[in-house]
Amino acid sequence: MKAQSTTLLVIGGGPGGYIAAIRAAQLGIATVLVEGERLGGTCLNIGCIPSKALIHAAGEFEKARHYAQDSALGIHVASPRIDLAQTVRWKDGIVHKLTGGVAALLKKNSVQVVSGWAHIIDGKTVEVRGQGASADAEPQRIICEHLLLAPGSLAVTLPSMPFGGRVISSTEALAPQTLPRRLVVVGAGYIGLELGTAYRKLGAEVAVVEALDRVLPAYDEELTKPVLASLRRQGVQLHLGCKVQGPSAGGDAVRVRDTQDKESDLPCDQVLVAVGRRPRTQGWGLETLMLDMKGPAVQIDDQCRTSMRNVWAIGDLTGEPMLAHRAMAQGEMVAEIIAGKQRHFVPAAIPAVCFTDPEVVVVGQTPPEAAQAGLDCIHALFPFAANGRAMTLESTDGFVRVVARRDNHLIMGWQAVGEGVSELSVAFSHSIEMGARLEDVAGTIHAHPTLGEAVQEAALRALGHALHI
Image (cartoon, rainbow, N blue to C red; front, side, top):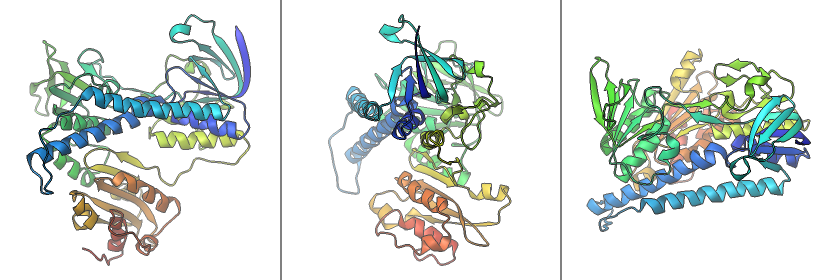
């Protein structure tokens, strides 16, 4: 069996893994990265990037259909149609460009990429088995000083609705060959609503089933009200407080039980199960390390160290929040620690963005979270209905909200809901990470006309002297 040695071995070429490998190589650390599927991981291949591409295409198609019917802007078009195959090719082109870019960056920085499935022998030794045409090739053994685990996550399955046939995960939903006439989405979290909304805009009839009594249950209700109103306007059927019992006898419907224990069938051509993701912990020898676990995730400290010396873990393997940008930040930090730098992973806030219609952004603490933490906080919101730029974009639903300590006005959190508010997440993160106070944001000149003016106005309103409301 062939064997080689390296200082750092990274298992997983997703956002966390490839960033860690690139940064380590920049710092002069001999680095090997093992990836069994495609560089870029879930995010670039079957998650963040392709989903946002599909969401954008669906939004543009819906806009064209709107202009074909009625337009206050005076824009009129003939009956639009969508070539779904071309849309998927366009989406795939973006994915290939980005994943190709990752491969080029790894090569440029002298990271050795090994294609194959990693299997852990011990904390210093990994065996890589081939894939595809090279599946029968002799395994390769890699011995390392530091082992970084970044295998990502998998879609959670429902025992009553296993994947296969009509039942799909987000992976299949992002590469449709045809558009189902009727789609049932199980789960009203961000993945289910993002994709369900996209399919509705493309023309499918969409029904969403959620066990809890509201959409986006991870967010506070004030934030989700504009999303709920938008779903209803679009004609998405909502079955809240309902539980999926499984497929009907004929397989062309989903059996649903409501809070009164009444069962009904939701006809469907396809079922998208989007009830969350779980760390990828099985099938690659992780159990041989006997690491400390925290539920289904590997337990780490504030330097991403596991319970075994020189074995590190980052990203989805370490649990919530399962966000690509969190994994990237962790990967960069681990590389620098191995290189001898002093680093700790203690961000003041990690932004979370839901690309529904309208978008939702949460950075830091919400009012309920601040109260639960025992903080005496004030909060204020500024509606986009009073923002000139929002009016010119025909998108006045939503608001920006700020949460700050009452005693010293230190900003503890920002939230926003509205079209394009994902881009405000940068300003929100900056203000919290840099310890800004309400007066700092209120006293900063914001460009006019922009959605960002609502950020300043929210701070002004929290201080008691908003100017435009």
